[in-house]
Length: 168
Image (tube, rainbow, N blue to C red; front, top):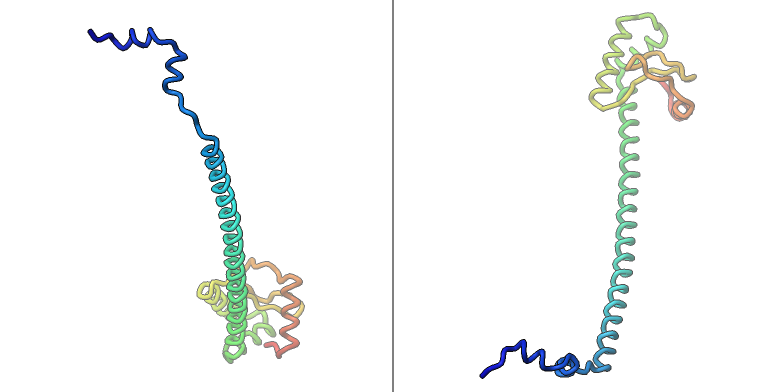
């Protein structure tokens, strides 16, 4: 007759069971696993550091390109502003109107016309303000009406431009 498995386990001692299923784990295999794990970790660290350096180099290149583009954008913007001023100074009707309002500040109709012109400049070219200013920084006409007075740096640029070429 066949004995149940539980009875067989009970008949054998626990040390017999352990010895029956116990295998020797070779030391050389243990060292090879540890060595391959260390090599793998070293390779991962090397790859990580290399990628970190490459990313830093790429970011520096990108920032350099962005900085160069911004410089070019500012140069283009400044050139456009100078060309806008040159266009105004070459417009004889506009120049005569500005000279007349400079000499005779009480002409309300002409002031309104020039203010409307300044308003259209601000809307079309997205300027914040447009001003007719004396060499000392005093505003004659401005759009909007509550535009702030020209600061020291702005006044310095006005004086530089006046020395380079004849003002209106």
